[in-house]
Image (cartoon, rainbow, N blue to C red; front, side):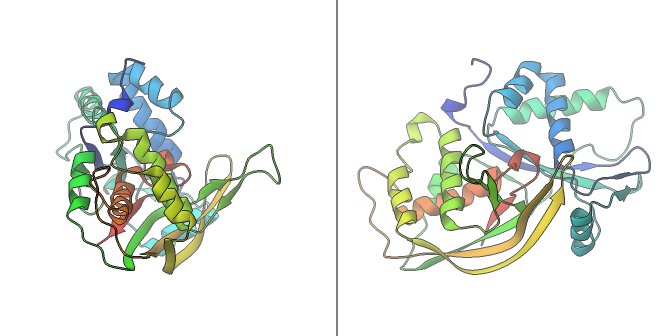
Length: 303
């Protein structure tokens, strides 16, 4: 399709926070990732309808992610509301945020133009900025930058990496037509996490960088338990979507990269552990697991 060519890879990837104020008092379901997903596509449809259709219908794995609406109240009451599907109040005097990421750099200017068109059409002006960028879960990068950062990392035997799962995370397993059908794994096994990230890298990488990550070597390393979970602080959790209850987990998991790190060779600028580190960095932009485009699986590498 000529609208956008994902095979050429992104020049940049973006993670941003959009700050919003409601127009009037009301309530909203505690986990609203589906609604934010729909709103993003509506914004893009106004600026570039062909691109919005391509994103919605033409991609099995989305090139963007959306969070649920973030309320400013303490974490535990929010989690309780998600578990019990208790609608939360919206106050026009308060500001709420959603987090969006774009794995295709061309989506950012389209989104910006859509927001500016929407802002220009509003009848009432406001002194509150329509969009602000926050800090901890925002940034921008490119595949080249991720590679360069990984190149400078040096790893000893039994290196540790910790991933933080900031929103409900689960992995879809099985097949609806075989065995007992599909189910969701609610523990971040290394094979699930890093194979998921490996597929996402393949989705976005330009052809010129295709040889940086060696899929077969990483899959063998994972199969041979080269990466193991050695510590975790995870909590089982669930949220209510419109039609079903989704189970998963939140928290952190620390992985040990076992064995000595190899030397780089002519076939790759990165060692195997550097490649794993690169994929761990990518998680910040693409998330991991099931339904990342609707707010699940927001993940980042702890430093």
